[in-house]
Image (tube, rainbow, N blue to C red; front, side, top):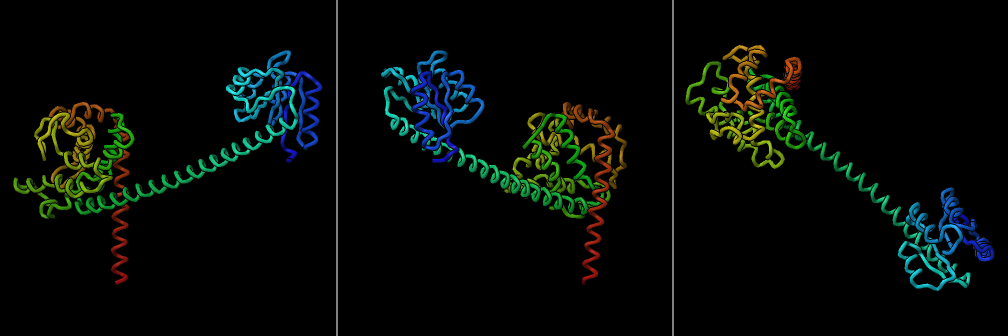
Length: 370
């Protein structure tokens, strides 16, 4: 037997206490002897025991009180009750409270040894089970972290792929360079003001990023035309919302973002396209994006218009509240300071310049190689 196994023996009768103590000491147990429940609890709180053997009837607190205190400290503790009363009800009460075994005096010490051996086996199994569960929990946590990292990597790859696609579109439509990056940031900021969080925010910002992806299907002669479009050309240009929707609708992870792509040109008064939706029938993400998109269009230089100052853009948005835009969303946008919007504009310019420079370097490198 291992010297590390420790037994606490509690009995107010010195003869019984010493008899049990000597028996287990000879078998290389570390034995602690106490005469009452109060001393036993103090000993138990000072050091760790494997097993407690306690009398039930004692002068201060009884063994059932001690049993409750011990199991409150250590629910896995094996406590063996010994008593001079052969009382079935008392035995049932002890076992119900969590005692491991119940032995009646007079007893043979071998009977106690058998109970102690069984208790050790039980405790060993409990410790093995706890160790196994602890290792399993560690493995589960590690695997969960691996899966989260893999998911984040996939999400980042998705995002970078989308950004590359939209950057290519921005470069093609030269007059709107940096537009997609700006409207994504304006949309994210505005959605935050409206307390949109989590997956819904991700969907709205992805929709903002992809809003004009359908313009890939619009001919250059119309998309890049320096002057006003004819009615027929406008009819073709308006198809970009549906082209974008049909391009992306089969991509499962982008499904929540499709409302922005399809409906960002709907108007609050019902005079927009493609379906002429009005008011709150227009998906919230599309209503948010419409304000962010129009603000960027108004404050950006285009071949067919000059860039307006931010305060002037705010006035135009306010005039269109209740007509083109959801009034509550215009009000939320108006609470965003100009300095914050200006930081987004400056950041998008730097990003666009870097993208163009990289593309030029890549092209020149290809020419030199050829």
